[in-house]
Length: 351
Ligand SMILES: C[S@@+](CC[C@H](N)C(=O)[O-])C[C@H]1O[C@@H](n2cnc3c(N)ncnc32)[C@H](O)[C@@H]1O
Image 1 (tube, helix red, strand yellow):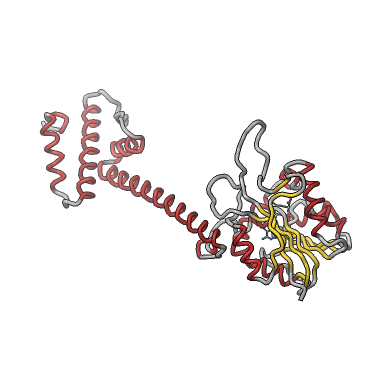
Image 2 (image 1 turned 90 degrees about the horizontal axis):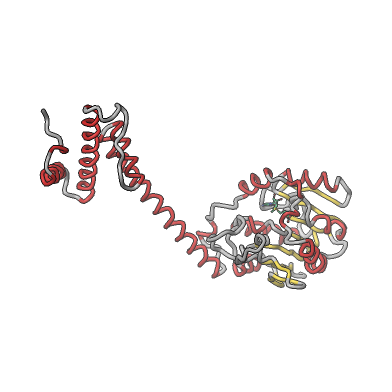
C-alpha cells in the first residue's frame, strides 16, 4: 500500500512539499511553481482516494475553499492532471498581470494626453489616440437609428431654439454659401437651409445623407457630399462663406480634427467664419458620451497653425443655455456635467 500525503502527519507533509520544492531552481518563481504543483498534486491524490473509497462518484470533484480563480485551477487539475493545473495557474497569474499592466499603461497614456492637451500640443499620445477614428464614426453613425433625426440629443426645445437664435443665426451669414459638416438627421440643417443661399451637407456616412435627402429632397439650394473623413471634395478653394458643425467634432480624433481644420481653411473665403462645437477635455476618465480628447488650448493652437483667427471660445449663451452637459441627468438625479464641450468661432483672415 502506498503512502499518500494524506496519511502523513502534518510536519511530514510539510517536509514532503519542501523536498519537492528543493528539486527546482532556487528562484522565487521556481519555488512558487513547485509549491503550487505540490498543492495541486495533493488535491488530485485526495480525490482519487475518496473516489476509491466510494465516497465520491468518479468525475465528481472535491470542493475547495479559497479565491474562485484558484478553485478553478484545482478543479481542472483534478480532471486533467497536476501539470495542467500548474500551467493553468501560471496562465491565470500572467493574465492578471497583463490586465493590471494594461490598466496602468492606459492611465499613464490618459495622463500624458492630458498634459499634451493642457499645453495645446498635438504630441504623440494625442496623435496616436486610437478611438474616434473615421472608420469607427462611419460604423456608429451608419448603424444609428435616425428615426428621431437627432432630436433626442436636445436638452430641451428651448435649448435648441436658443442655439439657433443666439449662435447659428448671428454667426452664419444670411444668404451665404454654407457648409454643414456632419448633418446626421438634419437637426440644424433645417434652420441652415432657411438661412442660406446654398447649403452643402457633408457627412462621413451615406446613411446620414440619405436621411437628409428623404427629409429635404433634392432642392437646388442643397448639395450632398460624402467625405472620406477629413475633406470636403468637390468644393473649390475659398468658395464658401461659412462652416457649421455641431455634435460632430466632439467625436473626431485629434489628428483628424487637425486635417479637417486645414481643409476648412482651404474652402473658406477671406473673412469667412467656422463655428465648431468640440470637446474641451483631454482625459477620457468618467462618462463622456464617446468624446474624443481635445482641449480649448489645443483646438485654438491647431486653428492658428492653419491660419485662422480665433474669434471666440464659449460654452454658454443667452439665458444660461450651454453645451457643457451632453444630456440632462435623469429625473431627480444630481450629477456633474458629463463633458466640457466648447464652441469655437474661427475666422479666415480678410486677405
Ligand atoms: C452625433 S451625430 C450629430 C448629427 C447632427 N450634427 C446633430 O447635431 O444632430 C454625428 C454626425 O457626424 C457625422 N460624422 C462623424 N464623423 C464625421 C466626419 N469625420 N466627417 C463628417 N461627418 C462626420 C456622423 O455621420 C453623424 O451624422
